[in-house]
Length: 192
Image (cartoon, rainbow, N blue to C red):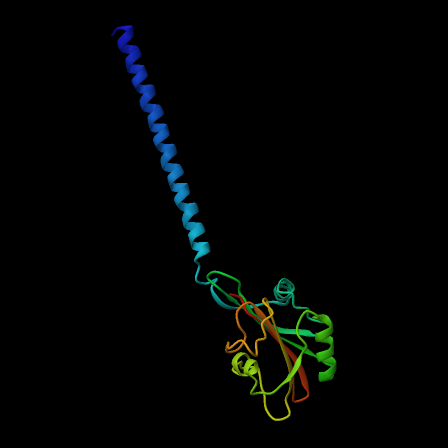
């Protein structure tokens, strides 16, 4: 075999080796890309993340801080749930208790949240109470129940005149309730 033929044979081998290595690298790159894409897709659309989930006191405190709702000292965390949305801001619904008279709880809440409209006295038939709280399994409203409620909107619209049933999106409602000698704070933060 001449030098030219050997050179061509070696060149062809090198070319095949380089081509094989590039092909293998391409397959590995595509497989890695597929795995990363599948992982990201699963994380983004994981149905376990969507819907209603209980959250702990630390997560609840962070959520309320992010939404600009101050929970005054003395209010004890009972429970909170987060409604994870597919897109947009999530909803939060929580409950706290306090061992002070109703009027003192209302005053503490108002002082801690000066950017909320003034808390107003409400009845069990109030639109916000009826639409957003009355169906909650832990909420009782009957004779002798005292209620004070306020809702803060992003655009400043009065929720009692906006023709929306209940608490609209992008608003926060706080409700102080005294029922059976127990004073509780209910918080509802609507996302969008």
